[in-house]
Length: 234
Image (tube, rainbow, N blue to C red; front, side):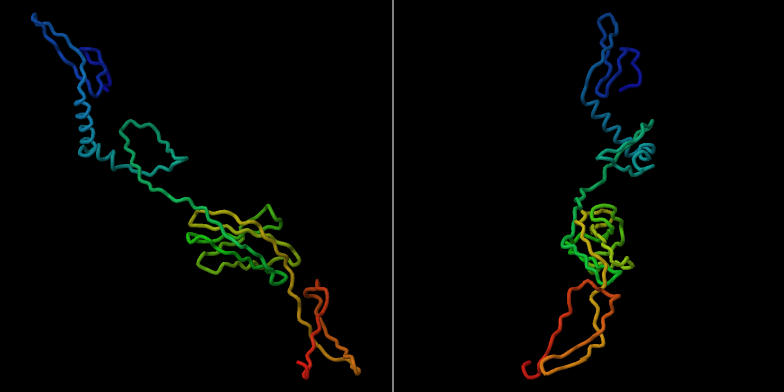
């Protein structure tokens, strides 16, 4: 639409309007504003030609190009005094909602726990292992394991006789999947091996044995199991 009213009819002409003059028999002029849809098409073509061929139009289309981030499917930009052309160039991105299964934690000694899991998504690129002293809160990232390695994380340097809880979360690039449920394990030494096993006495029907055991190792067991072997009976 024009920036100001015309002098003849005082009309703000639209894209599809034009001024028309009628002259009567006495030669008197009378001006009218008329409509013609063809004018809109012509103006559209003129704008397209301006964008494609005129130096300023070309600059507006190709120059000062920048990418505008979107927020909630929208983008915001300031009002300008020159034409601004927006080109949408984006593709549909699949939602990433991966998870892992069968998480388990096993203590291997008084300061080490191994965490295992099964991956379920070939799009996973890594797995984040989180650790906490509490079963439901205060988890912090301990280590990131790449997906092309074995699905196990060795967590060492832990305090003995302490229960630790773990969660695993898959990743794909900078996207993250769902957390697993937490699993716990207590750092403790495996049952030690007895030493200095020997016979200390015997009768016609009994044998007395003795041995040593390092009680600084794991102590929480109920009994010693004694096995015998008879060369005659097998």
